[in-house]
Length: 171
Image 1: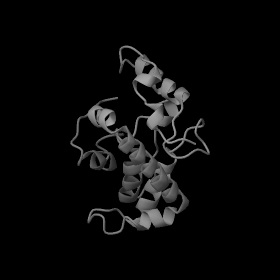
Image 2 (image 1 turned 90 degrees about the vertical axis):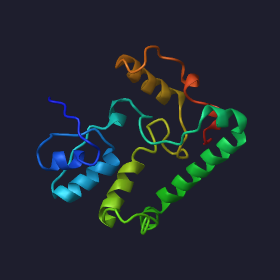
Image 3 (image 1 turned 180 degrees about the horizontal axis):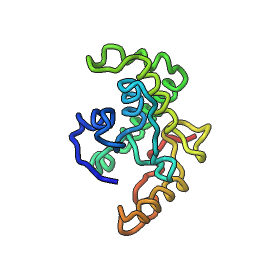
Image 4 (image 1 turned 180 degrees about the vertical axis):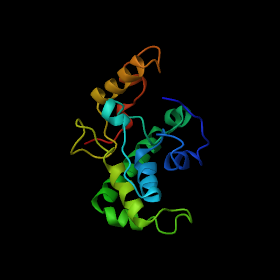
């Protein structure tokens, strides 16, 4: 395999035109967009299928804010989880709410596919039936182990070094 560095705006074009065989990106976003533009199917190698459960978008907070206003952090996590629960329950409404958000939005069918694909990342086998954002120590350990084995981190720390269970949604 030959690796080619391409600017973010050109990577999908490089794959669609056949100049590149694949790209590193968000399958939930770029896959449906490329499939729509190219008019042909796109396949995926998802990190989540190889033990990287937390290698995706997320709600991030700086250490200073986390330490100075933990109650606010908990409320933000709870509100985000509640919003994802509502969106998951009304997928058509969630997609419709995007109308007018940007002049560059893809067609509604692509937004629907992107959202449907994103929903597959809300849960792991360990969190099925729980609120979006609920994490398990086992899932964190698996992700940490993959990063350690791949050399991304030198030393695998316990999940508590990366994740504060008391700020995560419960249930």
